[in-house]
Length: 299
Ligand code: SF4
Ligand code: SF4
Image (cartoon, rainbow, N blue to C red):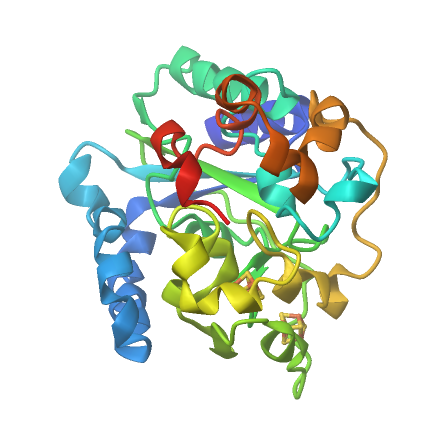
């Protein structure tokens, strides 16, 4: 007979999630220390981190919560149109959070429904997470957080995380086969075009190309760091693409809904010529960090 933890994990696996683990909520109590440490290391990013402070307050926000269910989905299987390679961050191209036509979006709804069918109260935040998901996933034994700050499983860093707070104490801890970063490896730091990743686990969001071209960037033509953007239009994968732990991990075996059709429109030349109505209908909903009203703030 299966335990409720095994039932939850079995459902996640049946839906195609790569991994699933469950931790008691007290396991997240030291998140606040890590949060403060980040601010200490990069004080200029204090404003950015303060906007995420709610992630340290899960016990206050959901006093009934007892555990966190964390799942990992591998998106490193989608075909990347040639004209978008190293121009649009892969997570944003295959963003499972907003594309209601994607299997990942449906899986997320199905997983939540299943938890509720088991009689559990749930809380989630599909866009931004209910807790620090990388730490929660690491504590659940699903993988490791590497020097570039990304979470890695056996599929590399091309994975997305989702979590639910639930109202029953449970624990299901996996073991990961992932080794630590090789000593002396510095490839991610040296590959960072803007110097944002200045040392292992030390990244300043304010100067990160991914931050500046998505939710953090405003008035980009006048942004002093725009010269460091290179070919990146939205997002940046440089510190992940160079990583030896990602070597051979991306397998282009599946089509993500709508990407092949949209790709020809997303070259720099065609973006400049793009009709505003097309942008609002087809482009902005997918790349939602730049709002409809901020269209003219772009590069
Ligand atoms: S995403 Fe790009 S800019 Fe940001 S830390 Fe990584 S390499 Fe640097
Ligand atoms: S590039 Fe090297 S140091 Fe950076 S995350 Fe990958 S293995 Fe770790």
